[in-house]
Amino acid sequence: MASEQLQQLLNEQITNELGAEMQYLAMSFWFERENLQGLASWFRKQATEEHEHAMKIVGFLNEWDLSITLKSPPSPSTDFENSESVFAGALAHEQRVTGQITKIFSLAREESAWHIEVAFQWFITEQVEEEVTARDNLAKIRMVGTNPAALLEFDRSISA
Ligand SMILES: [Fe+2]
Ligand SMILES: [Fe+2]
Image 1 (cartoon, helix red, strand yellow):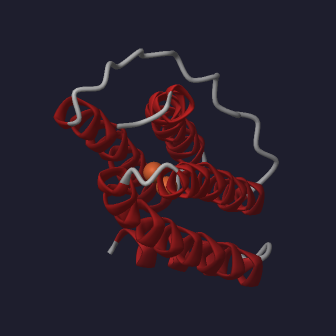
Image 2 (spheres, protein in one colour):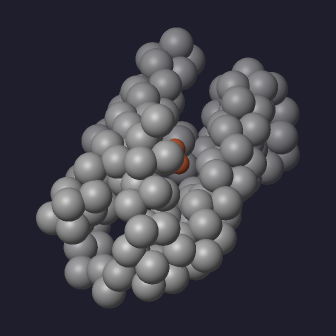
């Protein structure tokens, strides 16, 4: 069983993950315009993963016989000042998602909805990984600074 509030959070999380997909696509397109294909394809891959997260939750809701109300995510941010601001935005975005996942996990525990808690353990672990990667990338792009050779090397290495 799951309360109305928990069901609503689960539904919202589908939208949040689809929003993350859109955000990463927008970041990918930005790097494409900057001729940084490695970074563009890396963000494209992240977008695909976010789509899979949304579908994973859809799968859970179906398994638990809960109804799905699909809502549109807000438009992604598109006007980035530079590469660093894209990565800073990605980290901030992942931190927001961690907050959303934690909220679902906590409520599931509060309601003794163990099946939901167990299912969302995967997302908790995933968010730790995503934040580690986002922090690591942000640190690296800061080291790159305004050095074009270092930026090209980062672009090459991230796509490998
Ligand atoms: Fe996600
Ligand atoms: Fe993510």
